Image (cartoon, rainbow over all chains, first blue to last red; front, side, top):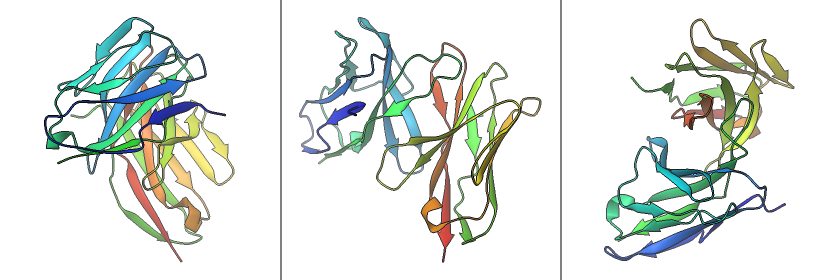
Length: 114
Length: 109
């Protein structure tokens, strides 16, 4: 019953450091995405992928990189962490953004940049 | 104008009350609609899909009005455990999931 698995759950970074948030799903979903959620802002899409080898930018992509080398994995890289990237990050997956398909979330990664 | 809008609340209601949330969307090509529930410091989870004819799941009823471009969620006989943030989600086929900002509900004893 793994579903969408994110690691780490909590992380504190210093300004300028880089890190990777890992995300894996075992449901063979084509669509994967990363969101950040800030108080009063709702979920904002960072990057998404519609299949292995295909990625695209969402609403707030600056400062983040992604890759999709396999169907299962979709890591999110912070290139040079800034305090503005302090947030909760959710990875999500879906069979596809087709009619009736829903989206499943990981448990979230709490990131603090000091 | 945001693609999906919701009243942020909070809605503070006593146990046993009936409460309704609305969500409006701007893209008339939207095809799929959902309500998600998010507990504090947890991930969003699917509450129910919203069908054109309206649908019910226990104490929860969802309605879709395509002409006016809004969906609604009605919760009857509120329980303390219903306290959460309720997110409206809209999909245009082949595009991304668009989330509303959420409506916070607090059910009071």
